[in-house]
View (tube, each protein chain N blue to C red):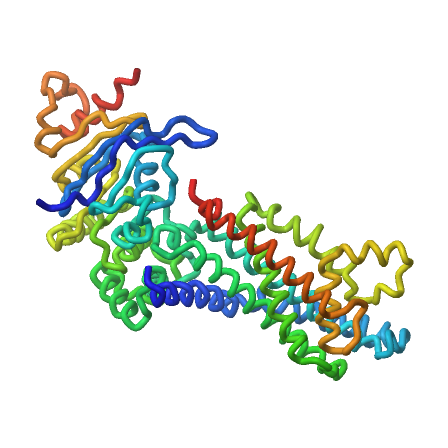
Length: 258
Length: 256
């Protein structure tokens, strides 16, 4: 398949994914916005006004980057995991692509980019919603954008692995519910690890999402619990591992060919 | 001499947690042919189709499409094949035109080319007024025709139809036969599996019968029908099917 035809195939998969996101926006875009409004209202305004300044900034400004990243991570992950799983098991329309000459790398890229679009779009929407509660300043916009896109990419890659290996609906809900969400909450969405006892600070350092949230927070506040370079390194490391895993699936037919 | 559309040699398939689905199948589908592959449920028809189209990996053997090995150049062979599968497997929330245009996109065909082509195909298959109807609201027959249209959107040289008329009423089935006949006249090779043996008898030039992963008969329709033995026919005392049906039952019911 020539390069220009591969681009058409990639565009087709991506377009289909984006059309789906927009078609079922009450499922794909709205929930994170509603949840964020509640978080901003409760943690930002009601509790935040009592907490006062946190790490030198009003508490709501501290939690905004974490809540944006929470939305980005879960949406990028769930978009790819769910779409791939449903295509594989229910409508079985993944066969439409598998019988075509579209290379596996393009198939994966299309699904991943769709997840990146949803993750990034929801992240931006949640950020816009936060403007109704606070006016976050962005100290390093490029750093924030870098983390927004890279985080979407990393968790879209992770979601694809989940989508490939899930055998039933439990398979795509277990990881987000019992792994992803706790890791995100314990990654410092609502607090700085400096507020934790030393032993828990050490434990937090093994949570990769801690670095993602802190890197993104650095983009906004200009300060974070760890060096932004360390955060970038962890994010790139995660991406390499997940790319490697996905490359393995490419080589073995995505686990879809019997 | 025209190249064979499909050449299968000693094809074997053993599923990881199942029986040996194919036990050394060899098959040739001449270019331009209308070839019927018949067999009872679980005989291995869909496995063969899966291997030819790239949905199933083979255990051993070779498959080539128009002289090109499917292992060596899978992208090229897939671009020559159109598959209308047994199960309705398009996205039920999409509209027929979008389903076809997307399918074209997977073959690298741009939307500006795919849209008019999709509309023509839908018109040809009697779905001209269903361009923008949600897929799941189509009737069973309409879904089948949409599946055929999807298989044709990239203008394949070789069309694989896995029970395309299952569950379709007689009138519609006959109109689909006419459509398929016009396709072969236009030079498209067709491999058809069906449980409607009168369909195969009416349409196919060549026929192969597979049972338990092995080809038990293979030849022109005339050669296969010549196997018919009137003395074993049920005759007037009971239901008597067509010749092909009686041959089929005889060949596939002698289970060892």
